[in-house]
Image (cartoon, rainbow, N blue to C red; front, side, top):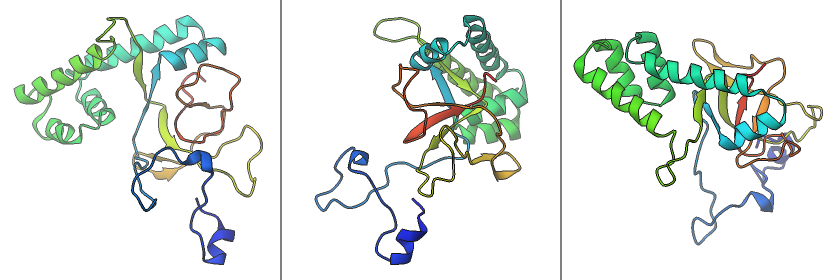
Length: 206
């Protein structure tokens, strides 16, 4: 998006490839914003990503342990104020999180709302049509991000620069190590891992 050479000419503010056009919006083909990045938008592990991770060597034991940790986190949201605020923030239920902070998780109304969200999160693990289990667990050490190109080729092949918002620290780039970048749908471990769209970035299995 940000390219000094384009800005210097004063003609263009952004450059797009033909493959980046996914749908039509208006008759005059105007530029439309349909989404934007959010500070705390966490990624989820779904069945497709788990198949990919398994093919890359992540053990079943590690995946099952992560799933158990996820269910325990959901269960603790109705008992522990810290887990409750974390749970509600991950689901973007910020108004309820504010009420839980002011009224406490012991409040009958707050507890009932949290219980409803807990049930929805658990029920969401089963396909309503086939009744088969599907994984969709939230990963705390992850973010859903919008990827942009590197026009000056500062990064080496296989490198990414990640800029996320961290609580009480603002915008920062805290990760200096291996990360996993996933683009859905993706079932082939050999596909490109460079970010080209809204994707999940995680270092949870380090």
